[in-house]
Image (tube, rainbow over all chains, first blue to last red; front, top):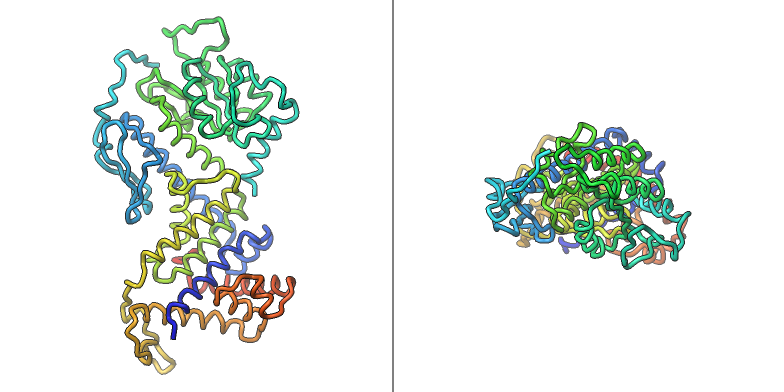
Length: 125
Length: 355
């Protein structure tokens, strides 16, 4: 008995269904969600909320880093066990965030970037 | 899908009054694409010193750019050619040429331009460039403009972060309800396909992970692919990764696989299977689910054939050939499978598996 095949077969069926979602018309996807017993508006709202909240968190955490004078190269994010790691390209202090929460932490949040002193001559609005 | 249309709309706004030979701005840049063929466009309203930096950045990212050196010119270009994928406004940009800004006074022309643009197109993505300020708070932006990101550190890296976030936000705004349902449905099936490897993650977790991978640049979004397709592809890749990581190492608690029969006796599907394979328990649970899926279609021969072919890893073409199904029969069987399994997606998976 080939156990692995049966397990992969189950995943193949689900992936097949996941892929074919894109082929459905608007009416068909609405009907499918209704058929599943869920409220389409509620499901759509949940997707919307999840996407916006993740973008908000990502943006606000990046703004915090920016206000502290740290500079992060987006291309240097590395994912290790679900956590993303990076560092300030100026001072080298680390920063990481967990995809589960989207919140960032690390030495870079402890204070201003020591290698990025703002010019003395700064205007204030 | 609509988020691609939003890009096309942008191009259409550019097209009517322009020919490839016509001047595109008072300060045309040497760009890799004709502005009419450009997939991404930007308006930069800034001093010359900033323009040089933005030019480099946008050339790298294959944007085409229109440039204005003052806010009046910026407004004219926006009226003629907007909306753009992004508008960058130097917060201290002068209102018009030849009039030096009085820096003893609060600078307002940049913020006024942003307000005017948002009146025309409320969803227009804007970034303020404010290199002369200490922090975004120093700009004392009014309530209607506080959502606009402020670039204090005028280097390419923060600009790239802002721009990616802005593009993703724009794509989220453009999603229709059916688009969101497609994403959730796709995520839900992927989670169900993962079985125990999902580790109680939900469809929303998978969706957010796909978006974060896009924001970090870990998953590159090719803008010629619409956002829904991009996210579904990203989710497939992430789910495969989770599955691979799970490998054959997982173990099951007895209570997770034991079932109670009609007489109230506990029975385990492992009891009758002598196997030393590490994956045996996991696969037996999967087999049970597969059996459950097939039993749903016991009286539907064509749906069973499509399921069997998919289960065996055949392509749609191979399935049709093997079972002698024509296109119409195949599509109808697939639809019946979807409709029936969407119900069990809800009932078996419950909230923890998505819907």
